[in-house]
Image (cartoon, rainbow, N blue to C red):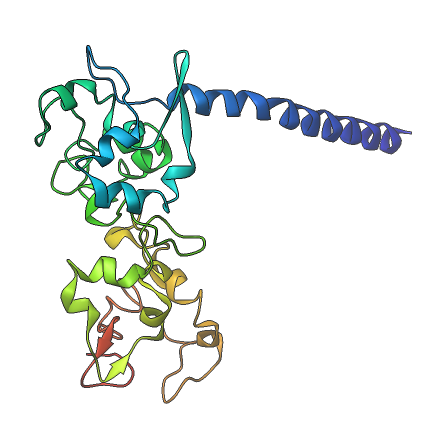
Amino acid sequence: MIKIKLRTFFLISMVCGIALLFLSVPNLQAAKKEITEVPAIEGAEYVGSETCSACHEEQTKEFKLSTHERIAIPAGDATVEGCEMCHGPGSLHVEAGGGRGKHIVNPKKNPEACFACHTDKKIEFQLPYHHPVLEGKMSCSDCHNAHAPEVRPWTATSLKDVNEACFKCHKEQGGPFVWEHEALREGCTTCHKVHGSITDKMLIARDSNLCLRCHVQATFPIIGRVSHATSRIPVGTCFSAACHTAVHGSNFDEHLRY
């Protein structure tokens, strides 16, 4: 009798939990709409992307093929599309005859324009190890081109080649090497988070857990001439315990030891 009651209680609890989850979805969507807003410029009005194209012809042509072009943001009684979603209403900028920073928002200098929609990325930048965007030492546009039509499936705007975006700054990790780490061919994001991480060097996992995501054969008794099953790493990881120190690639050792 007690078992039947417990089973009934469990089933009722599970059904209620699923129901609450579905009921909460509209609220989550509403919350996202509330935090998605257009940059404000006091006294300015919206003029439309066609007005922008009079001076910024190349950018507006490119933008028509981008992911951002397909987005529309509610702004009061109007719906804002195109350039002014990120740069703010442009009437004062037009009246001033244009010019850098004149009555217009430049997301390169103000990442808050990006964070208005990409709130999850702002949170990632607040993790212990992150790219210094919030500190003003770099901007979102250093890695992303918001106008570009180049989009790779399941990645972000303009990251057609993820590695090339990284190698603009991290040149020494790009090689070429005589012996390459296969992970580098797969892409830097195989091992690294791109915005922020709780792990040093912005790694996606800590210690040997990172390596074992691919190198499952390391659980075998013998690999080459070394027993990985019985050995112990006193400190560090596979790459910081003086074993495989050349994790990106090596010109001297096929096992990436140096």
